[in-house]
Amino acid sequence: MSEQIEAVEEVAIDYKALYEEAIEKTKNFDAVVAKKDELLKETKAAKEAKRLAEEERAKAAGEYEKLYKETEEALRQERALVRQEKVENYAARLAYELAEGDNAEILQDFIARKIAAAADERGALDKNQLQAIKEEFEKGAKFKALLKGIKSVGGGAVGNLQRASNQATMNRQDFEALSQTERGKFFKSGGKLVD
Image (cartoon, rainbow, N blue to C red; front, side, top):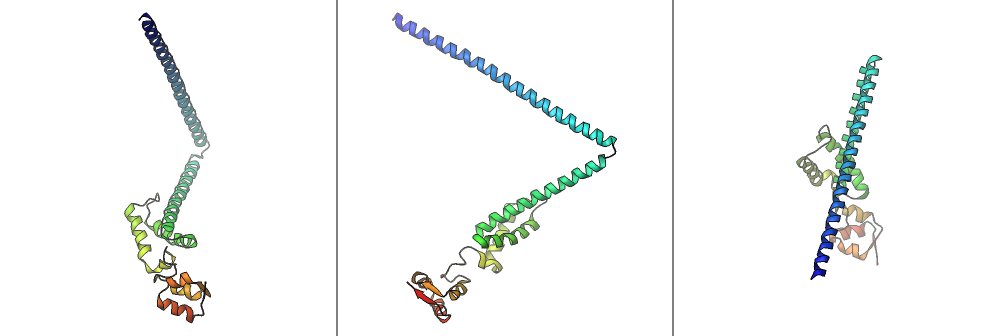
């Protein structure tokens, strides 16, 4: 029984030591965080002081207006670049949803023009605008030949007859996927079957 009491007292002492160690580490951590915050404040203050000193020098030299105009122009150009990048990102994402490979790259140019016209000054579009542009390209006859699924041989897709008739040879599996009319046109254009 006395052995059990000693074991319990040892465990209590171990927990107490661990607790005190944890408290000490927390104090150290709090001190590090406080020092970091102090250094950040000092850095911000130094940067602000430097900026104010540069402004004062520019004012004294009569170049404040020039500096202001240059800064405004640089900001305007940066915003234009950000807008253009957003427009291109929207266009690329939408183009690769609708088409593949070179067709997506071609389609991207047309989509970018539409998005640039619809986007706000920051290059942002809402989901409805983006969906409307996507539907315009999906449903419009002008770009059907570039869209996914349209270039496949067979299935009556637009552009199939051209592709089939321009091939000198075709394997039997692709030939059997063609409609009767497309098969006739394939042979009339000089096409040959290969196994």
